[in-house]
Amino acid sequence: MRLPLPLRLDNIRLRNKMLIVYIFCVLLPIVLTNAVFYQVTTNNVKNQRMRDISRALEQVRNDFRAEIDIAVRVSDVFITDYLLNEILETEYESPLDYIAAYDSYFRKILNSYTPLYTSMQNIKIYLDNPTLLHSGGVGNLTYQVRNSDWYRELETVKGSTPVLIRTSRENRILPEEHVRDTFVIVRRMNNFAYLGPSKWEKILKIELRPQAIEQVFSNLNLNGHFYLLSETGQVEYTTDPDINWRAETVFYHEIPIPENAIEFTTTYSGVEYLDHWKLVGVIQEEEVFREVQKPREFIVWLALINLLVSTAIIFWVSRSMNVRLINILRHMKKVKNQQFVPIEHRETLDEIGQLQNEFNRMTMQIKSLIHDVYIADIHRKNLEIEHRKAQFNALQSQINPHFLFNSLETIRMRSLIKNETETAQIIQKMAKLLRSSLTWSKDRIRVEEELEFIHCFLEIQKYRFGDRLTYRLDIDPDARDVVIPKMVFLPFVENASIHGIEPMRHGGVIDIAIRRGFNYLEFSIRDNGAGMKPEQVKRIYGYMENEAVELGERIGVQNVIYRLKMLFGERIRLFIDSAPGEGTYIRITLPLQENSGEPAGPFSGTSTDVKFLKHDL
Image (cartoon, rainbow, N blue to C red; front, top):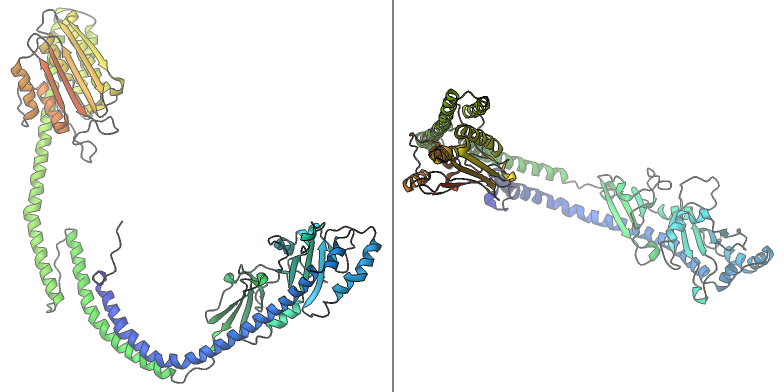
């Protein structure tokens, strides 16, 4: 991921630098100079008009709060009236007893406030006392009442705190569902809880007159709309006729505001029932700006002339530089893609023209160097790689006939001397070895397949020597699926049989073991045959150090070691313990790839695999 460069002038493109110069040295000074006069003359009018609108909006805010405060003060009288509380708490033995109490005090207090305050339309107390008659300002706290919106809202507050809620009118002549067109003050009547637990749940509901609220907002004679918002931003009242706020839940942020409108906001604070409520006015700009200054056209035309002249000059100068620099950059990218094309341009004397000339000269020099040095070096290395591949294939092709010749000769001589049926089995094993040795399209095989070749070869040798040869195989099960180069263990088995056991009159034993370690594969072979002289052991160790391939008669073990060196380099390990008459022990350790059963060779895991060629033997 490319990290962003730090914001410095050196990291900004030349075109953008010229744009910065144009903006800060031409555009902004001209615009600011010509706009100062217009701004000074219009700001005074704008500010004065906005102050007038803000004061009018604050007046409406205060008038609405005054209407709500009246209902709250009346509710204070009801919830603090001890006699009223006693009447509501009493369990009456008969309706006549309740009517007597109602007429003596309750009717008087209910009827004394509604005519006095024109902003209140209805006062009603809801409770669950079954001995009261639910009429005349008293309502039953039924299931429908408990599921009403104003009752659920009241459950979120504690004590007798007043709650302002917009809901449906109590005595609607034509009831409509989901029409909430009036405000109510709702409070719990539990101020006398200190005298003992109340028997009944009592709720006071004071309904405001919708016409009084409409009268408050109609006092604003402005070209715009006004929105009364709750603390959640929901529209509780608006003068906008396009919003059905009485029947729908509308939030202010969902209302599209015209682009040419100005918002005025005043907030309620200091009272719990109106805390964080807002009154927002959306006024058209034409209400604020009624007159346009006469010098506007003169200022606009003067600014346009200054901008056009300066813009044309700067564009002409910047284009002269930017076009030529982009052309140089384009040719540099071509050079990166090894396309050495010089820049064709007319002769110029400025710094960019000199840069183009130097770029053309440098391009020609790079092209010459690449053709003279780089391509020649690549050709030399390709020849070296091809030489190594040819050498590797030559070594490989010489391994196969070495032991096949001896095996075929043995079978031929045995068949001439004896006419035995088991010869067919030996010929079958020999054919399997022959097919494998002549087919090199598959240059890597599993240890299990190599063991089949070893078993075939040893069975052929056992057929030849009879009881003189005994062999044992000790194979780690985890090593059977490891992938190894083809026929790297078989030549050591051949040497143990031909050069170790064959010279012994009484024969001998060959022990073969293959183990898999954490990151290596170990092959070991031991025989109790003739053994090797020290110079022979030294010569085999010399194959590990000699990089040149010397082809001769004894090419089996020598070529295996060269093959392993070409595949694994210095990571192979060879150990030989042998002496004349004491037999021979050879151990070879091959590296494995991490988390894989495949030997880690120089060609493994790359896009270029070494392929062994087929040879006619």
